[in-house]
Length: 36
Image (cartoon, rainbow, N blue to C red; front, side, top):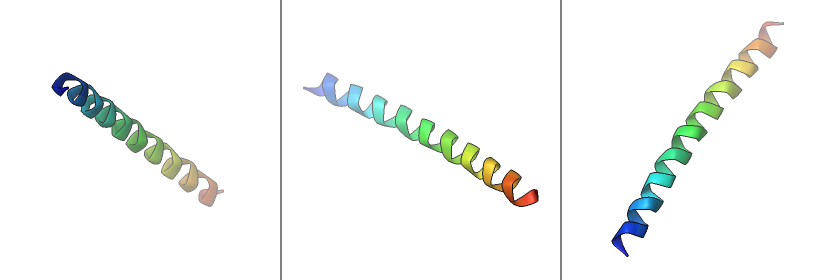
């Protein structure tokens, strides 16, 4: 069904946003580690 596909696309978008945020946090942690 079309609605189901739309919902899946929304979920994928949300997951990608979360992944981006997590990657950003990981980068920050890495830079903090190297500075010490």
